[in-house]
Amino acid sequence: MRYSALKVLMEGLRGHTGWKPAWRDPAPQTDYDYVIVGGGGHGLATAHYLAKVYKKARIAVLEKGWIGSGNVGRNTTIIRSNYLLDGNEPLYEFSLKLWEGLEQDLNYNAMVSQRGILNLCHSDAQRDAYRRRGNAMILNGADAELLDETQVREMAPFLDFENARFPIKGGLLQRRGGTVRHDAVAWGYARSADSYGVDIIQNCEVTGFKIEKGAIKGVETSRGYIGAKKVGVAVAGNSSRVMAMAGLRLPIESHVLQAFVSEGLKPVIPGVITFGAGHFYVSQSDKGGLVFGGDIDGYNSYAQRGNLPVVEDVLEGGMALMPMIGRARLLRMWGGLMDMSMDGSPFIDHTPIDGLYFNGGWCYGGFKATPASGYVFAHLLATDTPHETATMLRLDRFRSGAMIDEKGAGAQPNLH
Ligand SMILES: Cc1cc2nc3c(=O)[nH]c(=O)nc-3n(C[C@H](O)[C@H](O)[C@H](O)COP(=O)(O)OP(=O)(O)OC[C@H]3O[C@@H](n4cnc5c(N)ncnc54)[C@H](O)[C@@H]3O)c2cc1C
Image (tube, rainbow, N blue to C red; front, side, top):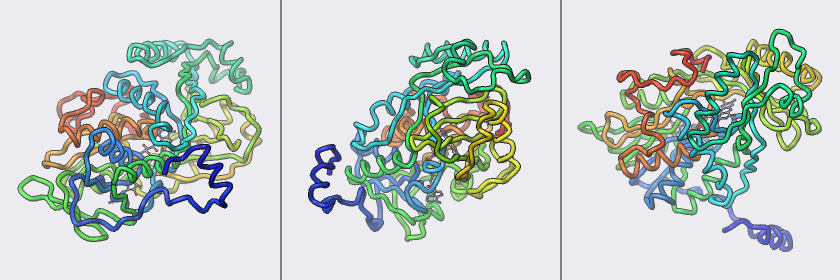
């Protein structure tokens, strides 16, 4: 069923009796050509592109909970492609281009809103670093503008420009960045993948891998054994636990990241704004809530809930940047499980086990990468060669020394 304005009108006239479920609820088959573990944004996008672009069939996505229960439905919805390094920027710019056509591709309203993202700078050195990053973005085909203090004042007059400790000196603006309704991305990819024949199997936890003579044969699940020629794992914050079942140890730690939403306010925040002197970022949802977040909780955890000291820390960042936020009441908060890699960059690679592939290490930033991550993972699964935008996202890069450390921060997850 295609969604359209005419369809909405027709259904309105006949009492909305003709809508069908957005995707089927099939029982697992005994075997598939491709099994994707994890029904988050990346797993569902992988299945969609495998079927649609690479014309593969007999594909299943196995999700231990329900579609959208992981980070794809827990993030703060920001999309952008403002990276510095060649290992990252081509992938994120590819992703932003896919976002720009996503709703037409999926025939689904994901509320893609290119309202801009502004990274504030607070020192001359930081402005120099932003200028360098902006130039790298432009060289990779992205858009970037360096704003001075006057231009930032015009755009966001409510910021604290009198803060002597963190003076606002300007900012790096990417107008094509913005926000997308996060869970609609999961639903849109699920619906589209299903329409190409992909089986989306919820409440199906992968509990083990069957590996013989160094090659994958299938997966053990809470709903029985499922054979597979190729298995792609995209389980975000559960990466270390799932890959340990295949005997692999990853350069990834799991940490909690929290998100916060205020009560609904009249429109005040023009786009996404990030504080350059601390961990704080904010945007405003279409319903009016200020959506904001900051640092990870800072210790390893598999809990999908956060702790109060980080709430205080994030709100301190908000108060330093825009004191008027102190008058808004907090409505909701939650936590998600981050797969923090040791250089802050992801992995999309085959593993030493034939037929087993891994996608993870997305840190805070995997939502914006969802379309490209799915596309290039599908490319890898279908062709056994890395996509041209993901050639450096190798699992052995810590052995080879080819790390992709965007911020030059070293193996410090809370600094990425
Ligand atoms: C609070 C917060 C804010 C964020 N803000 C942003 C942002 O603004 N912009 C941005 O780009 N990124 C952001 N991120 C990061 C982004 O959400 C993630 O990097 C991205 O969603 C991860 O990919 P995913 O959608 O596939 O993950 P998930 O949705 O977590 O999908 C993984 C799935 O695997 C399933 N799974 C796990 N183990 C198994 C198993 N054994 N068997 C079967 N299934 C299994 C899980 O249930 C889960 O559904 C944020 C994250 C959080 C938590």
